[in-house]
Image (cartoon, rainbow over all chains, first blue to last red):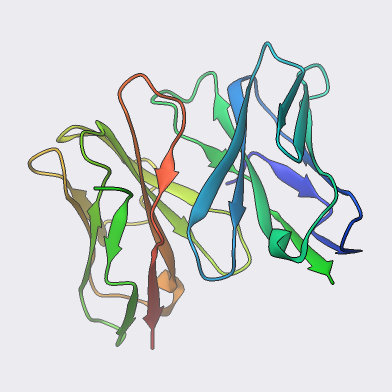
Length: 113
Length: 113
């Protein structure tokens, strides 16, 4: 069973636009991480936000975390065709032990030139 | 090595065959995880090793699935008497001691026909 739920399931935008993906989860966490997966490839780690952080930036990526609502968002600014991929949020639950990550079903992002 | 290496990348097995999937984690990484990813879904946790000890195998779907890491480095995921529902990508990941980021391999794509 998956803890995280991403919204929307699929997103289609034009190059240069911003893309926002949301993630909701169920239990208390140590941290939340976002991963990207290109078609047929493995997962690439994008960014980690700890439970005591509210916002984090990395290049064109901005992640927010609201632990009271158990939700997070990933914003990709000025999107490029190369950003086309599936994006997953993954939570490290407080009670999970061993820092094993629990993934959502992902958002499939398509960026059109 | 530079990253997590998995082999084979692609495997087609006839129903009832046994398969073995290999994972070579990043050198020196203590933690090793196996995940299963069905088409269009997020990765689902299978099992976790700390060095050679299998500390969590709660995600293994049945007793046909078996994982080992005898010397605390390379790991093998074995699936006995494969069934069609075993068709998925099997992802291996590793993490350094004290780290939070989990690094994934490219995955082994298993198709059972």
